[in-house]
Image 1 (cartoon, rainbow, N blue to C red):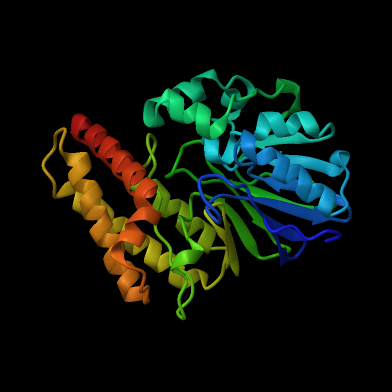
Image 2 (cartoon, helix red, strand yellow):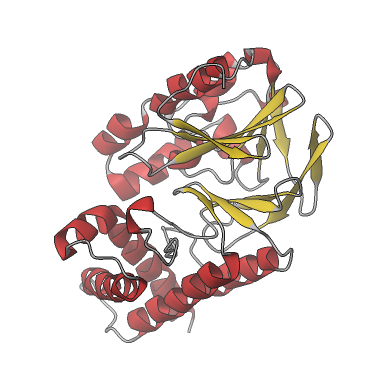
Length: 320
């Protein structure tokens, strides 16, 4: 790096993690992959993140026209809210997105309405800014198993539903790693211990499907990855241990929801039960932070996870 930045960290294999600044430090990542002078971003944070991403390019000595791809793992706004504004600054880049999500990044109006339904209109404007669409001719839709090359470096895309139907993950053989978006869960550095990283599922509304998520995780594991590059947050190794922890908690979360009575009070009751599940897991992992600090760090995730599981279960019950 020609000029060190506090929010950019090199991870090896030409990969840099950029802290987008969304929500809190070390919460939301964009990855910058560099190969033979060409570059790609994986996820882009929000509109407020774009200055950091451009500054990272400058610090690494990369021109704006050196970026070939902006890859959105899925179209939730903490991953793709900034792609439209970022693409305006990158004249040669193409936006790479799952086919189920492409239209929402060309015309983001429906995406914004969906976010407003979850977070409220004022919070969406404050957190994400005015979402900008991308010209259709600059969009590449992926297919399961498709390969794009970044200066000869193959990036393989697979369909990974479960967190969202518009989610794909990216296999990078050069690092023997996956860029996982939200499929492989959340791992915050505040919870690292001598054991290593801790992880938890993310079951954000409104397309969470537990069996599909399990299948997607197992499909990624079949490649024998040495690393997972999580948007929330950073590179993690020790993949088999983390996968077992992730899937065990997923099963426990779903079972907890099914044990609760249906109705308007279920979501709040589930949120409290999820807190107990994760607190217990964190204590077993050796985390010594006080409970109030842990709850503060997980507050947003507990609410969204409870919403997502409750919506999935209500739909399942309606079909029964």
